[in-house]
Each structure stands twice: as C-alpha cells, then as structure tokens.
Image 1 (cartoon, rainbow, N blue to C red):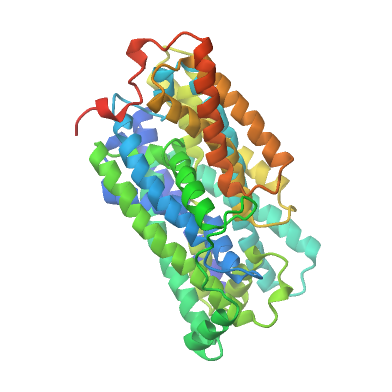
Image 2: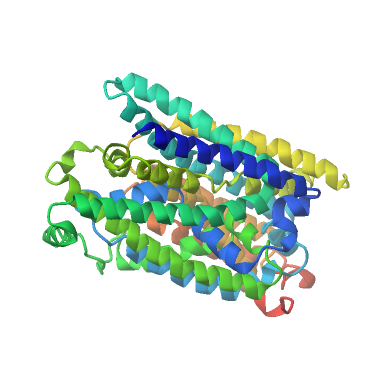
Length: 501
C-alpha cells in the first residue's frame, strides 16, 4: 500500500466524523436523535438495512467461508431463510410497530405484558449487541493493522498486536464521535453512502483478482468446480452442521425474525419511516439486495482460493485472507478504496440503538417525568459509555481463534431466541400474562446458555429456533397456573388491529 491509500482511508474516517458533527445541529429532541423525526424515505431505509446487515464481519468473513478448506456456497441456504423471515416479519410484526408513538420495539412488550418483560428483553439486547459489535470492531481493526504491516514488512508479531490495539481505539473513537453527534438519521444516510462504497470496493477487488489469476475467470471457475466450491444445497438433517438446507431455511428464518423483527438495531430503522407500508417495502427490497451481495462475496472467496492456490494453508483463519490480498496485492488507490469500504461497513453503528433502548426501556422507568432535554443528554452520555464498552469487548477477544462471523452470529442467536419467543407468545397466545411469559424467557435463557457452554456440537443456526420454541412452550404451559392477561392487553401485538396506513 502507498501513501495515497492512507490518504483515502484516513480521509474517509475524518469525513465520517465531520458528517456526524454536521448532522448534530438537527438533533433537538429524542425523536430527532433516535428516529430522524420519522421522515426518512423508504429507499434510504432499505439501503441502510443492507449496510447494517453487511458489517465488516460479512465483508471479511463471508469470502473466507468460500475460501476455507471444504468451503463452498452452502452459506446461501441461510440467506434463503433470511428472505423467508422478512416475509413473516412483514405480516406479523411491522403493523404493530406503527400503533402509537414507539421509540423502541420493546415498548410493545410493555403494553402487552408489563415492564418486567420489557426490561429483560431490553437488557438482553444491550448485552448481546455490545458483544457482537465489539467483535465487529475487532475485525475492522485487524484490517487497519494489516495496512500498517504492509508499510512495515519486518514488523514483529508483537508490533502488529500493538497496532491492532491502537486500531481498535482509533476506529472505536471515530464511531463514538460520529454517532454521539449525528444520531440515527446520520447513521442511516451514511449507510446509504457506505453501501455504494463497499459494493464498489468489492467489485474492484473482484476485477483485480480475475485479472491476477492464471486463466482468469475461466481458470478460477474450473479450479472451484474441482474442489466443489459452487455446491449450494445440503439436504441432510444434521443439527451439528452449520449450513444445511433445513438449518438455513428454518434457522435463517427465525434468526431474521429475531434480528430484523424484534431487535432494536434494525427495527429502529423501520420506525424512521412514516407508515407500515413503506417499512415493508424497505425490508423486502433489502432482501433482494442482500441475496445478490452474498452471492458476490462468496464468489470473491472463490477467486481468493484460486489466487492463493496451492498455498491456501498459509492462513490460519479465513478471516485473514481478504485483508492480506487487499493490503499486499491491490493496486495503490484501489487498495485504499477497499479498506475504506471495510471501514464503511464498520461504521453501521449500533450505539444509537443501544442508547435508545437503555434510555427508554431501562432508565425512564426509574427516572420518569423528566424533560425531553434531560433524556437527550442522557442519550449522549450512554452513547459514549456503550462505545467504550465495545472497545473493551474488542480488546478482550482479540486473541480468540475462529471465524468472527460465527462468533458474532452465535452470540446474537443465543440471546435473540428468548426475545423472539416472547414476541410470538404475545402474538399467538392471547391469554398468557406477564408471569408465565417471564418464566418462559428465563427458562429459555438458561437452556440456551447450557447449550452454548456444554452442547457445543449444536450448530448456532438452530439457536434462535430452539430458544424461541422453549420460550413459547414453557410460557404456554406455565399460563395454566396463572390468571389470563387482562383483556385490554391481549391485542397489543396482534397485526390485525394495527392502525391503517
């Protein structure tokens, strides 16, 4: 990499920070800060959903999946479940989001069950999201450390480790400042720009790879066919395998129902539109884009395999392959563009969503009837605190082996199951009140923690399905020992009684 690449990279980071600061002048109320005053167009929300879903983990780890020994396109089976999950969300959940003035999705649980369920779900979200995004921050820092190593070929492993730590802090601080001032609307509009940047970066990398491989595209395709890289479907029913048709379709559907349907990080984007129809269009449009881009990232993994073959064993993790190619083999200028694209994916900050949840669902119940300006100030402080927490997570897990994608998704799946389960209880089991729903969530959390720590052979793609099923069944059984929910609370999660467009 050359000086031009560094100019592009740090110019992007500085630009993001300045953009967030500029947007800060519009943030006068908590509605402005968290929802952009509900005036964001649906197409911007669609692009934002895609950019959020395509984090640095996706940009780096998905090519690594196809690159790895025995790797192929079977990850797409999970994406098919993503598409099915979006359809279910559009029918079951989105109509309920626009009933009343919601700031967080967990306020629906308060209306349906009461404050204890809301606070438990919100707490689980805050914990899970900070851990998952700390891992994402680490992966971005690894790329920046690789940039440093390209300028210091003789750098020792200890020096590169220090560079990784410094990178975590620098990128984390840029993310904090950008979100602290800009709020949710700034996050969405930057994500629209980021989508274009990282797609352009990925296309540029693919073109360079094709031109660098002996035999070009035909040679890469022939080698990929030889090693079964284009295999898509695996119809075996094996709960220990991560990517099969059944774990992908069922597990991917439930995973998306949780991440896109009951997770404040993504639901907050729907709430930035003005009506449920626009939110539905945004969600379904994002699904088509996501499918196309995952195919593209997997194909980049195939090209990387052909480029490094037969020396593919030099990489201890698939996550290391794409950064190595970008920093060592991309032409000057293009290398900086692709690294900037990786940073673009990293800047899909969750800090505003975490702050929204912490303020509205965890802080307000203990400090009610304060002014909106008070809550806005608290939101800024919490944005800073959660940013520092994510930096701490990244520093804490930086020496852990394995795929960052699997780590982040398994952690998210572990906690999202009980949360999705209680939303399904509220939607379909109208008589269930708060105590049995709370019992269902707690039992599910305990079982899923046991599965995660003891039965590690169970693939993470099944976690949300198992967790939500346990919550649903236990809550239903426990409901016979408690009084039914009050009549006025039973329909709060029913899409049939949602307000009209």
